[in-house]
Image 1 (tube, rainbow, N blue to C red):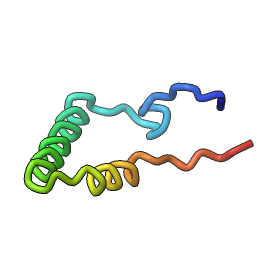
Image 2: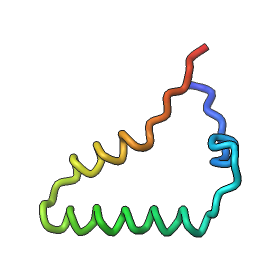
Image 3: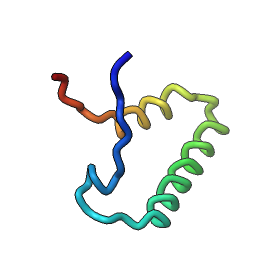
Length: 61
């Protein structure tokens, strides 16, 4: 198993973030995806979209 360590968004972005605004954006995206899922029953498209936005390129040593 890889040695995975937690890191904060502040460290990644190198700036302070507004957590309330971030939560609003996450919940808004969830609502859009949920509405899409209810009408299509298609998880694969939603997961692929989320995966593309979340995957970080971490250099291997």
